[in-house]
Length: 273
Image (cartoon, rainbow, N blue to C red):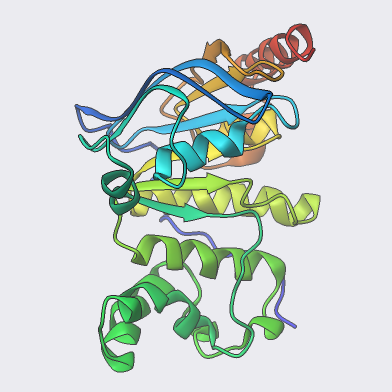
């Protein structure tokens, strides 16, 4: 069984975030949605800039994952509009988004590299060409020696890293990450947060991250939207200080960070019912 200790992605001197590219990648205007008589989202207005990492936090069942489905084109809002990379039709949104669910969903009969290379294979590339496309990312993200390992030979953190590489290899400009570390233990989760911070520096994308972990959102994201209880609306937006060190332990214990975490928790408490 591989160790859960995750290798660093970035060189020691690379401690600042890459500047965001001007422009808007995602916009929702007055988006409301529900299922039958159950109202889930209530007038969501959200804007995400190109290259920006935005977190969504809120009470359980408030519709965070439903909002990701609307962004990805897998669902159509009852009212309001959704635009991703300039396209508003579901097919256009789906073409622009790569979705990573809570669980890694790796195929147990495929090696790590063949799991990661599923996207180029689905585009019609040969097995050899798909592996050739995936291999540089395995080297960059500290997985080169595990490329031929089977999923049951990898730690939980490594499986999530392979799943993230598979998401990157889809070649989409927008990544939708739905609680990607929820199934991991606390130590591995912290390591994976630090690893993902470096990964997004090495391979910048527009990202919407859903998480129940306020600290995770504030550490990884340029901006965090706090949602109320169902039917959800945006009740606060928080902007962590940036640039921020890739040293997670140092970042989450800084006075400014802890004050912002308390502000986020206070907003959640006030709007949890």
